[in-house]
Length: 185
Image (cartoon, rainbow, N blue to C red; front, side, top):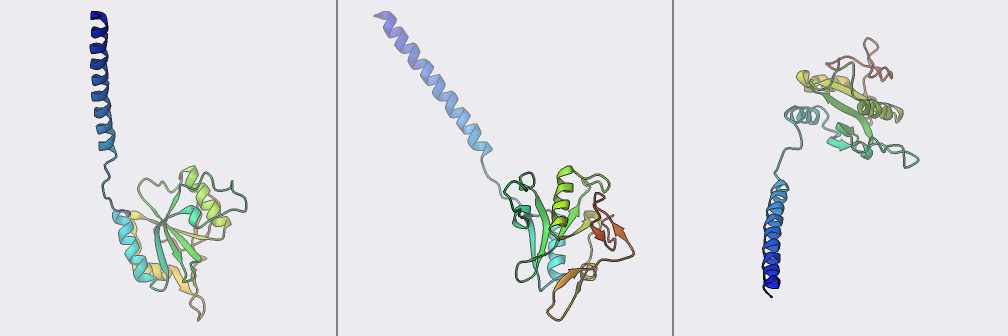
């Protein structure tokens, strides 16, 4: 009888210890899950956003857009590795057609060697016929520079990217096109 009582007391003690440890573990996990508010755009991206809005008032300026919102494939497997990638800015006309993508290169971007994922992203955009403009974060263009980079084609105000014949900017050697070099290096 004493053995049964001792075993029962021991079981109750073990269960109490397990309950305390479980509560502590849950409290730690809950603390990790505490959400904090943060800004969706970095300081450079905020500056660039407002400059784009000022320079292109008749166009939609979208920030931090998922690549899959601008690109699709005929089969479902084409974008698997790129679906988590974001585009810094997407410029669209009033019909939501993508006019250009703007990427801001931070100090983490080496102009000669970017990540394999970025290379795939730019190749996919090029294949889809989407112009890519890259500017360095440490030399963001002014509103005037942005307006210069874009020009009006016709009275219906369709925007297009100005491709200068004087400077060649090649991203990853894939021949994005001839662009005036405005800090994209």
